[in-house]
Length: 163
Image 1: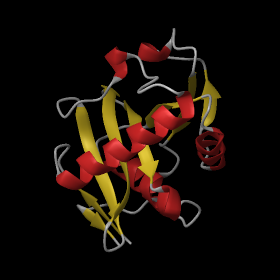
Image 2 (image 1 turned 120 degrees about the vertical axis):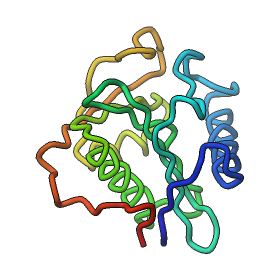
Image 3 (image 1 turned 180 degrees about the vertical axis):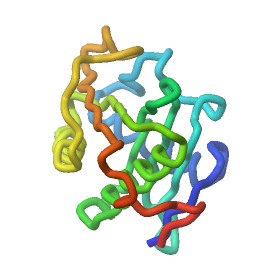
Image 4 (image 1 turned 90 degrees about the vertical axis):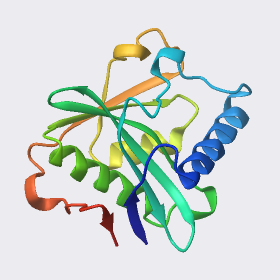
C-alpha cells in the first residue's frame, strides 16, 4: 500500500468522497449530516491523502483550525478494505503531516451512527471532547482530539508518499 498526497479535485479524491457520502446517506437516511458550515472544500483543506493498493482504497484530509491545530476531515476506507490496516496507515500519515505543518493537536468529528469510527479513533489514542466549532449544535456529532507533541519522531515523514 502507498499513501500519496493529491489535490482535492483529483479524480480518485472525488470518487472516494462520493463513496463516503453514499455510505453516510445509507446510514442516516439523508444525504449529509454535517453542518453546511463544516463541509470541507478544496480551499480549506491543507492536506488530502489517498491510500492505494493498485487502486484507490481510502483517504483522509486535514483542515487547519489555528496555528497549532488541525482537524481530520472526511476520513474513509472502502468497506472491502476495512480491518486491513488502511485506516491506521492513513491516520498515522495524517498525524505525521500535521506535525510537519507545526500542529501539535488534531481534533475531529464523527457521527453517532458510526460506531466503528468511534472505536477506531479511541484505539488510536483520540479522546472524546465536547462538540466544538461548527459541530456545537449538531445532534449527531461525536468529537475527539489527540495531542501530537509527544509523538515526535515516532511517526513516519510522508515526503509526498508512504509505502
